[in-house]
Image (cartoon, rainbow, N blue to C red):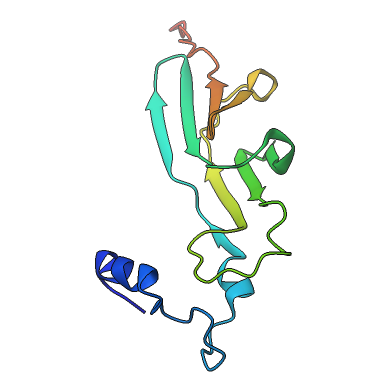
Length: 140
């Protein structure tokens, strides 16, 4: 469509937005905004824990699913905007979004100690690590 998004901005306000109210446009707006996105992530690695942060703007707690199985952390979320079915947009750049990300985690993660908290569109996940043990071997 446009490679330079800033050049498209004036066209939105001039009434010449791409595909806006154009019946000849072949873009299906519903499918365009029902896409799956890999959420951006920050990782902090410490000796006793790993902290993950995922950017999930507009996602509510009940729209979020986080699972841990076989050393895989699976994040699935869906941002659903209310009352958009009744509105006919002239131009639209955001809408309903599905988020999904799967991470292979190290074997020393203690599954019972995983904590998650959603604050202002940022999901914070804390993964505790099992302490490393040194085994002294007796030489005979």
